[in-house]
Image (cartoon, rainbow over all chains, first blue to last red):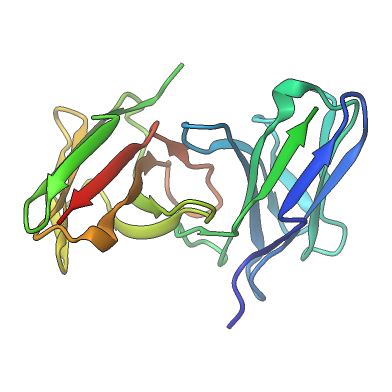
Length: 113
Length: 113
């Protein structure tokens, strides 16, 4: 079956612009996670969803970051007023209900000029 | 605050040799310890995982050794192959599903012929 997909694969934007990053989880995976991976670092947790609701958003760095999952499947990570420090690979992962194994997508590489 | 410390940062091993990566954690609530393998331009992929009720888990050429009292765990790759060249991340979570994963900083492994 299809894995986690993320679009776009690459996004270049200018400082101050708004961006949206999309994640399509594996079908049937009710848990969805967003992570951010800076160059040479491990992924850092941002937020996770159980179904449509954000169960833990403690990793969002500030109020410029927001994520939604309105129908419990596709999720969108939204970043307002982008800054150069937001440049990173944004990873999405999903998992089956109650299971620990998370399946990661290929990521979206965001570059803020 | 880095909750999972990983070493070494990089590792060069000859083909057929043993690769060893070490990790230490602080949070005693962690209950699930996965290792992820990441190739350039790809998302992390689960390699092997362990829970603290066992001291060792082996899957093929990959073995996790776990020391609960020392709060340390390690990955051993036996008979290392050039195709194993990748970045490896140890990680930890509190388990029980729907839990954010805390990653180490990664070890870049290069297996030379």
